[in-house]
Image: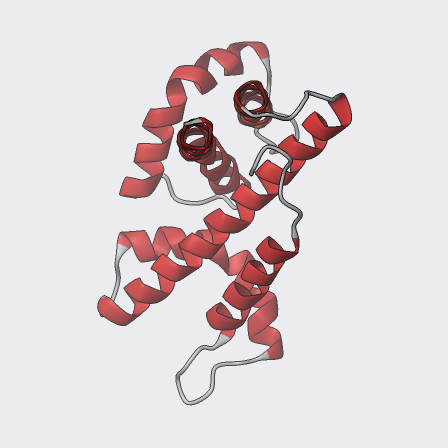
Length: 180
């Protein structure tokens, strides 16, 4: 029963925190707000971000309110997971868990965005707004890979290389203490 509850809280909190992370990344890479993905993320996160903007200003192009909310929500989720799980709450483990969970979630978001971006490239011929939004999101990762491995005969292998490296990074990360 405890493992099922940890699974549910872990995944539901990851989905919600991921919305704030995607919002932060979209603003960081200056993504388009005219896509369905961007508008969905903005609507889901607006009830917390809009009031936070009244208190916290953005600094030098960094969306501080979203970043603060992102970290605060992850701290709440991690604290909740510690309260459910069998491990005692220690400050060093708590801080490490928050950092690991945010890093892991960021990598998973980029991995999933790359996967959808590649599938859309195969399925959709021509322009598609979702492919454009995902392209803006993943191009900072693909650009260095394309310099090393340029497209060969019209085939771009850089997403595959980046996805392999991202998955290797996920495997290299230690698991947080509350996972059985």
